[in-house]
Length: 50
Image: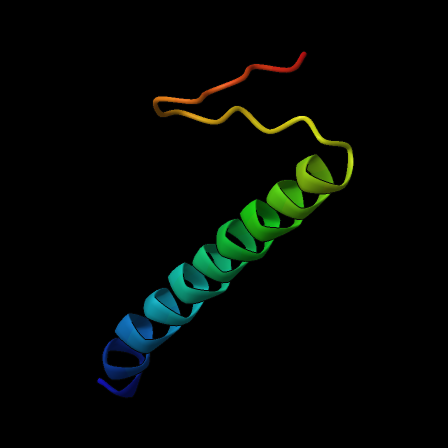
């Protein structure tokens, strides 16, 4: 009975841990692209660097 009440908490903990890795990884990727000037800008005065 007690195991069933812990299981959803464990599931949400694992999901939150995975989501944190996705968010932090995307921040790291954006920062590394910004440092290498490899950002694609979308707009009226857009430039694309490869």
